Image 1 (cartoon, rainbow, N blue to C red):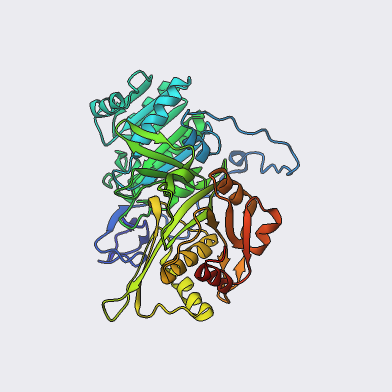
Image 2 (tube, rainbow, N blue to C red):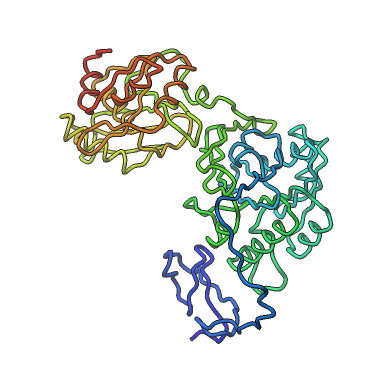
Amino acid sequence: MARDGAIYACQSCGGVQSKWSGQCPACGAWNTLVEEQTSARPPGALAPARSAKSRGAGLAFETLDVETPAPPRIITGVSEFDRVCGGGVVPGSALLLAGDPGVGKSTLLLQVAAHASLNGAKVAYVSGEEAIEQVRARAQRMGLAQATVQLAAETSLRLVVEGVKSGDFDLVVIDSIQTMWSDQLEAGPGSVTQVRAAAGELVRLAKKKRIAMILVGHVTKDGQIAGPRVVEHMVDAVLSFEGERGYPFRILRGAKNRFGATDEIGVFEMGDQGLREVANPSALFLNDTGERAAGAAVFAGLEGSRPVLVEFQALVAPSAYGTPRRAVVGWDTGRLAMVLAVLEARCGMSFGDRDVYLNVAGGLRISEPAADLAAAAALASSFVDRPLPQDCVVFGEVSLSGDVRPVSRMEGRQKEAAKLGFASALAPRLAADSATLAVHGVTRLSEAIDRIARGDW
């Protein structure tokens, strides 16, 4: 039986249980429940009522028709980072940056801190994972040794808070939140209690002192941000830094932003001297050999407000085993199964005895439904062994009935394709109303497949 004033928190998902068990009922992880002390107040009991004098004058309401000026921003000088943040970081805001180990989180934030200091901001970089000599050596390798960044290597939350309060900083980087610990708590560093307490204290400090605070967060093996989910609710923005092993490209993606648009991306290329910004990611993700093989289709997509062109590569081959394989990289597996089912049911193509492989070139992950037609075109091109035209892009959503549905911002997709030298598009018929390219409009998926099979362009 649990002792009075004790709870058991899961170190994997942050779920709280009243008694210990070997497996967390919330996430199913084993041996992750750790005892933590809490207040002796019974569950559901209200806090003692305060006097009217301590409560203040009451709640003041305002209307929506009052003009509010845009918040000031600190321009860091790393334009791709500033884009994802909404035009720069806002003083008094807290950002959480998460990513896989070794993807380049510390490298990115060191560049952000160095360029912000060169632009006149007073910046502090607190590392709980590396010594000052290691951070300084990385800065020298990246050519940023002249930046006036104040470095510290500390894991004590109390010392970090005192140092930041006395420094009068504009921007503070904490690398990472999982290494911070408070001596007022019995839980060990990295536990749910410590992460929650450290994040809450640092966010309050950022709001009180008008400091732009960037917290680095670890991720679990399934890609989720480690620690309690309440940390993601505390901060003003959640950014994820993604990259596939074997590719030099890195994608900075905004999942939450109270001061800007979500789903914006910034594209970087990892090199010997750090991360290099990629101003035109469409040219980066496309094949520049001048030839279009069977099974390849260029998708005109959107990442946030930015049009991005990327190549879908498909291979349909006879299966050597009884059960055909279905493998996909960079796209949703369930979406692939749906497109294959529509191709079989509505277009008369049979994949029952064939292996199907689908890949998004460059390591980019596509999630919007507008990629349905590009995936179907790549699969059909490989199935009939006939390439699509070199100067053609594809976009459109495919329904279960086999219809090709319009998608958002079709004109912007065409303009991005025209800028890179494309002359035609296989797209929903309504795309011809705002055509920048020569649009081969289709209303049914079977029309697009017939056009690919005949080579009628």
